[in-house]
Image (tube, rainbow, N blue to C red; front, side, top):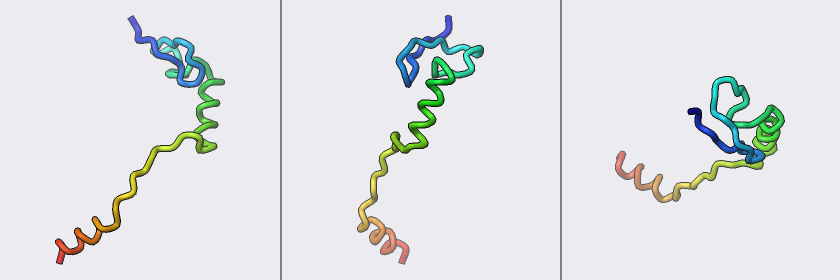
Length: 63
């Protein structure tokens, strides 16, 4: 029995099978909507900035 997932764009149930060329999306439309959101930078991976004093500590160890 194939896995069933929710389309990330519309939430419709989608079978995870090889014949579904748009998986995990239910259609090309939902796939394109998601791609457009990435292109418009609506999604972002958060970046944790390292404290600057850590760089100083590493330089002290190298000397």
